Image (cartoon, rainbow, N blue to C red):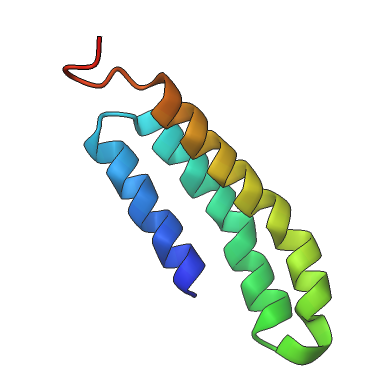
Length: 80
């Protein structure tokens, strides 16, 4: 849903600042999240909510971590 679209937008942003490796890492971490959405959340959201959160949350957190590392190590113009 919205979190997936936001992460895709962040991956595109990382591409736009010339960080293709981090964009690929973030995109790769999206794949299991989308899989768990399709196999757990969409068929029965009420019954599988906790199972979905437990399975997909680590990939979201690692995506946030990868983005933070990327932004922290990026060579920003004018920042010396």
